[in-house]
Length: 228
Length: 228
Image 1: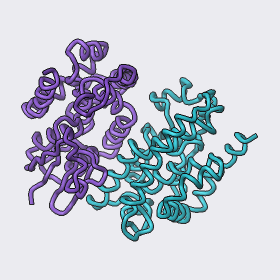
Image 2 (image 1 turned 90 degrees about the vertical axis):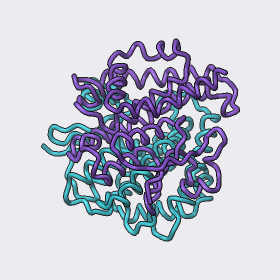
Image 3 (image 1 turned 30 degrees about the vertical axis):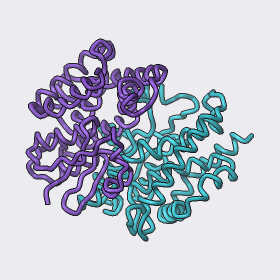
Image 4 (image 1 turned 45 degrees about the vertical axis):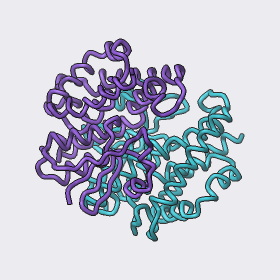
């Protein structure tokens, strides 16, 4: 039974998992769960993930959710995945865990809070909330500033001075890509102070294309719909 | 050079790391960083962890922060750690990653929000905030309810129906133990609907004593100080 990835490409961590599978040649079936129709609360999907969140996978009999856990599982189980995505070396691997854990309480909250209180509010029947969005901008700036000054310190093109991307690059860059839903002027205002961050997004995009652009195309389509 | 654990026992994830080391006979030096004196923002500690958070470790030349990353590093690097803490089996290990990731955006926020807006507010020069505490109680109840109905489903004494504890049990139980800082009546009100959760806390305590009680003794001392 082929790997199933439960997916709505509006979700940052879903996109990270999809790109990871495509870049590494892991065969899978993408099963659409429409967040805007609340399909993640359906009885069928609750059987897959009782936490009602995306992404989730089913691989044979094995069910798993939480994107970092999924990325690590895939990197550990599919021999076609190159070592740099999730290095066997315990020191390199531990640093990647540290970045991934840091994302949860730091980078995760900024982009989500901004888009949910602005462009995505109508889709989820929520009011526009400029104070909420401003709070999200503060969280985002604090996180981007730490990425710029610490996680990207050194001269490597990727996090932790690495020469090749890891699952941490993919997870964090997909998070920041959610800002594509904003007006270009707003996005530029938020990202322009962070030159290394911008270059690193481009490096990650180049290292994973054409899959990166293909998976993120949905985001542009959603933006166009929202603008209409 | 012996392992150094940078520690304030007021911190839930610090306690998880300390108990883990003690239970597994890992020798370490506990280096105190007093959160109430903002020592985590000192230049010395910023060299150890530029994110200015506890816990952090230094093992020889290797620096690491984020408690889950630390627990996984220790379990992977110290051969005296039994397999059940972080199983080599990829399916068991993946489920533990899933629990750990879930904690970040779910269980983590409840107890922290409650105590920071009530009993710990004076220590950090913040006003009491009953609305904030009420929000924290909602988050806590939602998380405990998922632990009770999903992570503790089945008959094992530990998460994921396991017969022995993993790093996930230790991390999550230490989080909930922060409620010890509250009045006993409040703590009982919050925990009493969750019978399996209460039994699991007791199971984890028994499996890791006398270290569990010894490390949590500081919490009782802090509570007594706050009551004075």
